[in-house]
Length: 470
Image 1 (tube, rainbow, N blue to C red):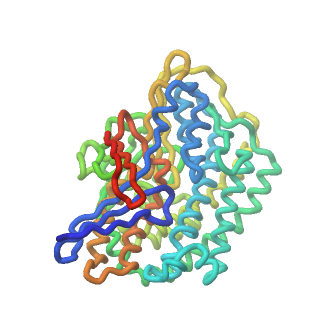
Image 2: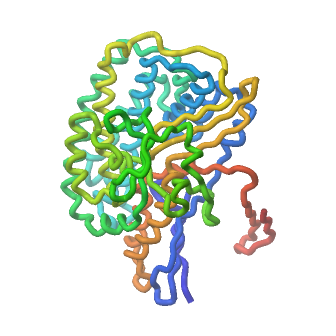
């Protein structure tokens, strides 16, 4: 009879998940699934809270990317106020988000994925971790620590805290940037750019070693979705949404975040708590798409900063359908973020003290959209006459990628896993597919209504004494 292989937990990701691989009678992969096993209820327990609390509350969804939730939430609250946020405040928010993307991408690449790339997919799992990297490749390990530190320090300078800063508020930001902090940020940028370029050079030099993985990770073809700025440039804060097919043909363009319910729908699968969004006109599963660094670089014509644009030219020569190249896209975006922060810090009015628009609620509904490290993030709120939240819906970046992760696991397992001669490196490649997406499962798992629940009481021998199901 067929057997089931269970990878539990999936390692070196943010959150809790497992993978199941079903083998047929011949030891071949028949099916496989990515199971997100945690659930959180932010959409429900914020109901009844004053709307102005939402940015700080929503930042608590995640300790890895709190800034992303802070910004998307504040943008939704801006709509509730019906105000024009001062341009200087928008630029300060942009800097904060770019620093967030820098530190999060550094965490993903250097801490979580580099052990596979530096030590090998088949290396000893006891060494295949960040400590093994520090031992065998100390310079690259130091670079990863420093690059993440630069992003976090910029967040701290602006928001006073590295994690869960409350500086972004409805209508703008709570205080302006000082000249001293501006100079301190500018002083760090050249070192960060040097590290990013050095890492990109190394990464390009090892790409040929992973030709088989690159091919296997490209077996799922999907649409791509993300924000695009003016002149088809990379944009993390504003802009309109664009959807492309796997061959980079534009399917839909100029989509407004406020209208997301008209073109995005969500479905659920029985094996996971994570919802699967899709492009409504094409249905499910034809309309599933990917978001995040790989999608963003496929959607735009240029990054809009010189060094990142140089890298984009080489990136375009690759099979940019392969999820393996999320790694490369992440490094390019780090370079872009640092260049863009430098540009924004040199804008004429960046030290202006006009950084917040004050108002009472002037609308009953607001939607905020921004690009988080892992992709497009949407916050949708409704309030009553007293400004209390009556409805909240969140579509998280990792959720957009759910279908691609689930089906990618199956295809990679079919390529590498052989039940008759099972080896740890085979299973690590299945996990590595998930790591390319850098999922943040704490952010992305939410429930509306009553969720399935199973509780078992086991005796010391593992037998079931009592079981409750809902």
